Length: 460
Image (cartoon, rainbow, N blue to C red; front, top):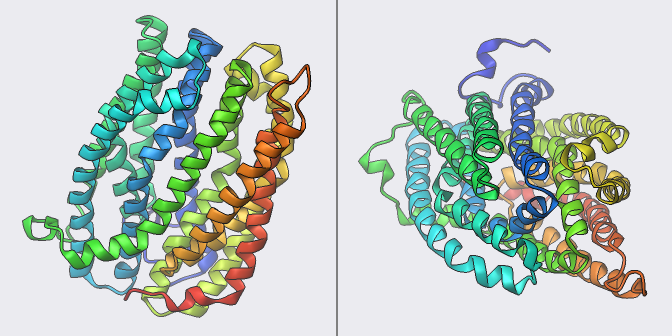
């Protein structure tokens, strides 16, 4: 594979050259970016765990399900925009590409305002409904309210970086994310370790860093005049564009919404186990994010690759690229999962020195290990289907594995394992149920990919 610097910078045409080379050139910066994103989130937990305590660590973790629920609209817009951008770019339709990007920018602004208001209003009722322990309730609400105030920065970074990746540019979003990550670390330490602002300091550090990354993304987009045109005309939403964005993005948004609702239900179960288990679950999910990185990376790469090549009417190239992507994804996922298992204890101790939390976390990571390999299959094949315009099939698979499989199994296991020493049941139920849903999801995804209905969903 020949690597040239110019292929890593700017819009990347993935309709020519070796599929494996295209995927690697696109995925390397994306993987580093996902690593930075995970580090971005992990630093928050490390700082509050070390400088404030396990209660603050649990408060940040307990806040995540509601935050994810509010973010689903942004995820839907980002998915729809990324697919449309990739296909129009592959088809060389500059006018439609410009209208798609402009419409997305305007919708993001409107959605950000709505989400800020809803988020602040929903925080306390939802945290009460989830039976958040009293010792972390106020900290969780404080963290969430500040995050929602600055939600526009998060929205614009994630959506515009998705647009840039749809164009094949995975480098500049990485650069901007690294800037934000560095700024977040500095502000975390300043606000929490120096100014003793607690979870509020972590939240303010996060929204400031996100705002900076969003601004950099917008400036980058405005400079890409050879690829698209952004002006008053293209920024005005057209009914047709909004409808297409909705058709493509709504299934992903609904999927994430169901994930988030399921996470809220599971969080309620998690809360019943007490603060130590909440803290453990928070840490495991942070480490889990690193193990999932290759899966999400290659899934995103396959969405862009499939989108551009479907737009260019190169179906055989899509199928060849899928095989190359699967090999790359599985190799990287296996290696990273092995590393996390080997160094898991050290990772846990970065967050907390509470021995029970550390040992419980190590146990939970061992339960999930095989599931990461299964998720590589799911994400890569789902990425191909989404890139082709078939966002419904991955949605139904996700709904099935989450709602029908994971949640009932978690509660049933918890109920069946109740005892005097474990009045709420075994915490293993949280992660065994997740493992089962991941493995089943991979098997079902393979079946639907092989049926091939996704091949007839192109928008161009």
